[in-house]
Image (cartoon, rainbow, N blue to C red; front, side, top):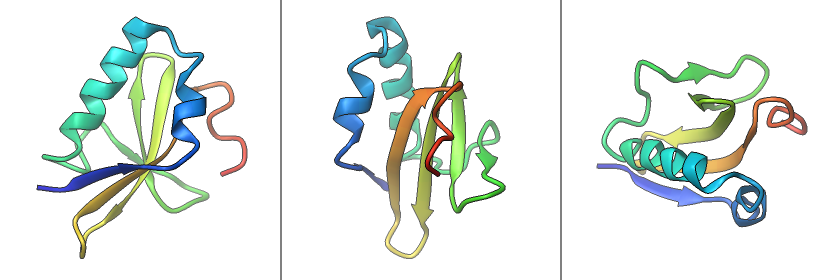
Length: 85
C-alpha cells in the first residue's frame, strides 16, 4: 500500500473547486494508495509524473516506487493545471 502525500500548495489550489467535484477528486486520490498507476492515468510527456482526469479537473502526481509514496503536487482545472510544470 502506498502512502499519499500532498504538496504544500494543494490547499490553496483546491479552494476554488466546487464541493461536488472536490469529493470526486478526493475519492480518486484515495484510490491511488491501492494502485498508483491505474489504467486511466497518463504519463506526462514534458515532465516526470502522471495525471488522472476527473471531469474537467486534473491531478498531477509522481510515484516513488522504492519508498512507496505517491506525491500529489498539482490539482486544477484542465485549462491551467499544466502551467508551470
